[in-house]
Length: 248
Image (cartoon, rainbow, N blue to C red; front, side, top):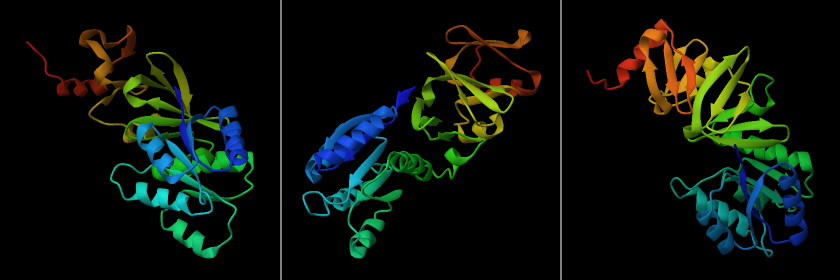
């Protein structure tokens, strides 16, 4: 798993230092702290960013809003972002609102506010409402990553790294090349959110990444995955083999 990458756009050192402290203590990775509009754009396009925390005002000008406006109109550039401000100007709020931020926090922020705001930003950006508030879920699934809540932070897992997923009561064990972790999501739910061309049900308790399959032992009802992981194959789900080109 990797940490969530956060870009901070804030021109006051005391404020940015406080944000860095809170986020790093909760296992987020700070990819940079930008103090100007141009610096923010440069960092944004040069780094892999998951979430942006933006001060509305930079050097007395609403350049934080200008940054949000810029990334919002460029196809495939937008990322979830959270606004911070000490301003109570209604016109500024209305302009900021047009950029569709995922949270709008007044300074001084507290630790839980910023952590919850980041969670909500990820949820709303990927259109999966109240996942992190539910007792039955803790995972947002996108085309490329799983975002999994662990205590007060989020972790991300590259979907391409997943070998298989195994259900265990109301949990799913998600296994990659390097580790296993638990997700509070049902197998039925997760299979609807994963790419059906890559992830296949092989058993009522298993989903496998077809790109990690090394051998299918049809008569033994067994699938061998990369790393010599052995997964059960039931008769009910053997039809998935038809998607492979089999040489006779």
